[in-house]
Image (cartoon, rainbow, N blue to C red; front, side):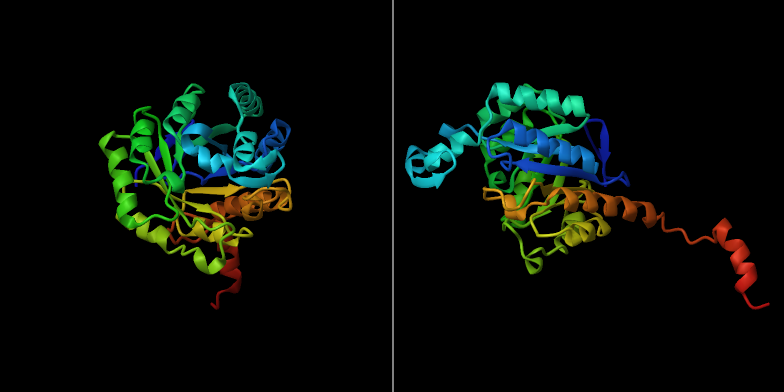
Length: 290
């Protein structure tokens, strides 16, 4: 398996698991909340935070935007979608705050204009959301930026993943592939973590990771034990907050414990070589029958 460099950090090839706090839209349109989520990720020891970027008039039709939908910003779906988007000034503030806190940030662009918008911030990579994996125009536009790419594979067939991987292979783009299940929150029986092994065998030249939407942290730890070299989890200040992704997110303590336990596993995993430790020698002499 080849490794990929993201923001100077090696991903794969035995490097520590690269952990992403998915802010997504859990900021609910508030820069103050976004900064608190960044602080949460920094405090827990995450490597990066991730946002989502949409050009609303491109991603959604006028009919979709006009649909009635009660929300904190108004009474239509459009009120909600516009309310959740940060403008250029907002992302400049996020960029400066992440640099101040020493954490990487990037985002999932949902359209070509959003790719151009994000690329101006010189991100360490671009992320393809599961919902965008079959958007060939978007994939090619992301590839044209010549940055590392992380793709999520929720709600996708193997053939759809193959097509996406082929595009980035053709452009010689460093790629990380994440197993994902696009249910929010996912039930344990839906996780199908064995797919991590399937992806490792099918794409041996790429780092394989896990983007989880389950409740709790156990399955994410299991994914790392199975060889996932990236873990991405949605994060929230409080799962009872308003928003469609909050229930599938980890609160501060849960995110902190997940990262702690991943690092404990990495520390204890070792290199597979069976040896007698120096500290075992006196115990061996004492306990073995002469």
